[in-house]
Every structure is written in C-alpha cells, then in structure tokens.
Image (cartoon, rainbow, N blue to C red):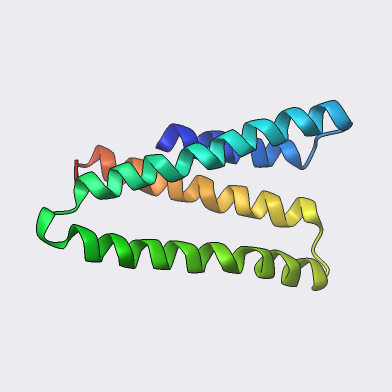
Length: 116
C-alpha cells in the first residue's frame, strides 16, 4: 500500500511539471493506475485487520467516511484555486500531504503499531 501511495505522490509531482501531450498522457495513466490500485489495497487491508464480529459495521463506517472525504476534494481544490493559489501549488501541496501520510504510516508500521 505504501508503494502505491508513493506512486501517487510521484505522479502528482510530475503532473505539475508535465510539458506536452505525451508527458501528460503518460503521467495521467500512471496516476490513474495508482489511484485505482489504492482502493482495493486499502479495502483488503481494512477487511483483514478488522475482527469478524465488527467487520461489517466498521467497514460501513470506513466506507462512508472515505466517500465523504473524497467528495470534498474537488470543492477544496476549487476553493483554493478561487483563493488565488495556482494548480501547481495546490497539487504539489496535496502530494506533500500524501507523502507525509506515507511517512507516518511507514513509521507506525515499522514500530509494529499497525494491525497486521
């Protein structure tokens, strides 16, 4: 999962400097594969980490929170653009936030603080 997130971070960082149609298409394909590989990886992790007795209700809550957070993304980006930030700044900031999340999760995983 951390590898997939790292691919997403790298793709977002390359996206903001892509120059030309071919570069844009290539980075868009890589980013699309990364994002769409992330969902089943997170689902599999969550479903195997949850205890049987609470798996269904906990997964329903997780899915609801996940969808709500995704739905806010375009509004947040639009609000930041309307506030005067460039697309490069917004997407680089997003990539850096994901990179920070990867770092935190990697430290938690390395220290054994995440369910296996």
